[in-house]
Length: 261
Image (cartoon, rainbow, N blue to C red; front, side, top):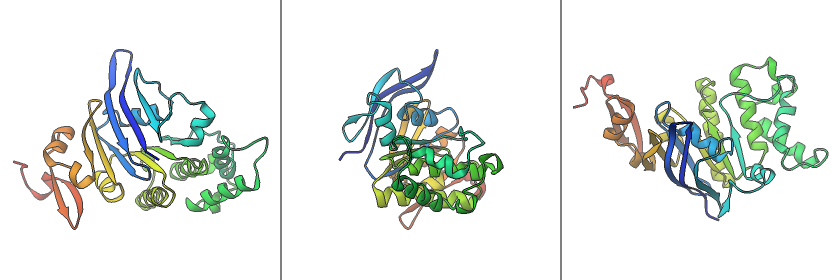
């Protein structure tokens, strides 16, 4: 089965273009980072794929199936989306909120398998101790982990994450990225994450896509996509890219006293 294909996607708010002819392919089972400064279009792209926003032009498909035209329930069986903040009612418990991820699959009531999938997602995100707590009792970082657990409970083939680590401390940032990477590798899920941290993207992701002004300016494995001149131009900051042991590290030139010239 082929992976996720985005072709010619354009989107804008009234007269302000945000995405301008985006073409992107992500292989099945790959973990792809969407990078770029604020306003570059990375969050908008995840929302178009999630069908939260309707593009002015273009197509989005997975495994040859048109994601933008399939029935909503079928789309929800293929694609799950983790927003930057919770939209679940605060009176729900953690377990109830995660169970919402089973909605595309359940009938009138959850089955034993539905409950098993939910408990596995709760355990995977380290939320077992909070399962009966209400969302209103959780910290922002805990609530964000609930959203990720809910998305995993959906058992998607495409997992979209819009800056999911922004509310997490360093430990849970790393654990979350490790979980997503394991899901892609063990279950063949295609994952896209809008993220700011270039080094996290380099370490955990198979593919790095850099957006600027609504267009893709770099795409490939991080070690190839991270070019010092391109990154410096996009972010307006002189950076150095260091290749070490097959990996890559990005650092502002000012940290080592270099002028970047």
